[in-house]
Image (cartoon, protein in one colour):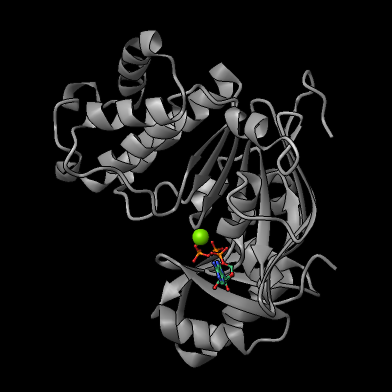
Length: 317
Ligand SMILES: Nc1ncnc2c1ncn2[C@@H]1O[C@H](COP(=O)(O)OP(=O)(O)OP(=O)(O)O)[C@@H](O)[C@H]1O
Ligand SMILES: [Mg+2]
């Protein structure tokens, strides 16, 4: 386990959790260092929430060990919990209380001393951008504001470790940006260790490292850049129309493993020949079929391409 002075703030080793016959988390290992933002990405039911709940000690482990700030979550539960703030996927606030009253409640349950709670709460509300709304009933906040209040509640005792479970799901794009600015500031300025689950690839790209989970297991882990590099040279961007017909055409072409729509263009994952060869062949094929391809070019893989490749059980070979 990490010592108190270590950079390692979360250390999960081979953690396993079963619900009856179902293995929700299977031998998952991960570490989060001080100042790092680590993303947990994966489809519904992958085991993200279960992993976070194990780390915060809300669920009992069936196997493996977890250290939080150097404390063992099972044997030194109180010390470990004191290190961490947790924003659950379905976090509940008191709708009939004001923003300030909510924060105060969380401060008290977290044992923030009487003398400190007022400046601390004001500070946190300022930080998340809710200072002007402190007298508003929590039930009257927008979805994004509620999430910010949830973040404020998780931060009220100045935790060194922060667990965020899909904090921006269902939140508008502008607030999502705000929220990420806060996460990035916490990691950079307070050196908080942050583990965040997200269904959004653009958010995953902002993490220092990403773990991709499926069916209770981590399938791949690494920095967004290194994950993307694993597909180097194998993604072609194709523009043309009509896109659906074009997709049907290219997907039948040899060497094309996958064709995914990204807005008004296609990303093809190709193998075998060079991008130029495949591109020439596609152009020719489209001409014969009377479909217009306006541009084909090799592009850098996006994280989404990496995960699609992974889900199909190919690539990375
Ligand atoms: N308390 C529980 N009792 C029984 N099964 C559970 C329980 N909690 C989770 N599961 C099951 O464990 C698996 C993993 O669930 P989990 O909530 O961790 O997934 P997730 O990755 O967070 O999914 P989502 O993206 O939908 O939030 C699922 O099959 C789920 O049905
Ligand atoms: Mg979940």
